[in-house]
Image (cartoon, rainbow, N blue to C red; front, side):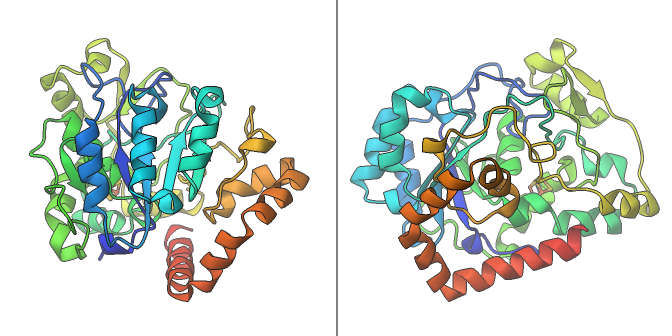
Length: 341
Ligand code: SF4
């Protein structure tokens, strides 16, 4: 059983899948689309409106969201809708100097900065279909139902609709799937049974739940299982057609999976938590309580971190005061630790 969409910490609005970097095994499958999309402003507004009543945050994500030609208008829209207190941005810092002020005014819930430039960063290969590498279906569903992406990441909206999971959204978009749920008010008010259709359609063709030693993002090639390779060719993926994929044809049994699970920390995508280019002091205003995300920053910039915590003390106090949210957060973390180690 997976947690309901309404319990998510944040729902992402993926305003573009354009990216200036091009990591291998990108979770948005960047490189496999003939051209990137840029979400219409009207649709961004519909997406924001659809989240009215949702208790979690609203994420603006890509690709690299600042590449959207109307990024400024999107920020103004969030301000006009008066949702800046619950708006977050995921960026690799592109155009940081241009947008710094606007970003700080708009994304008061937090800015998640990850420059992706460290060659040790890793991405869990989404394109290794778990159904192709695990024949034991009971084991496959056990892994899927405990998927770390679903537990720790977010549901998402892209131009094809609303999805319970970010990876599902990317798979649907890339493989010309039937699309997500209509983006209408309350679409997110769904229990597991109500989004089971998306789980059954997409999770078996996804590799996120497969315990696997994630390759570095700077590798040239995406790891792809044979059927997903065929699907990529069918949709004319530029990356697959250019031969920038490696076919992954291995099978895993329960014993090997249990052994791999012991040291598997796919959420530690920073490659040991140390980055070549860390946050600049004035860029530290990450508030999401994810120790694996901000501890390396605190260690590197202890004084600036204390200052940032002091500056944002009200939000931190509110978070702690909200007992239900805190209880859910701790419960999910503890569950995650027992499942994944
Ligand atoms: S298996 Fe893939 S599609 Fe399913 S929840 Fe995990 S990341 Fe999302």
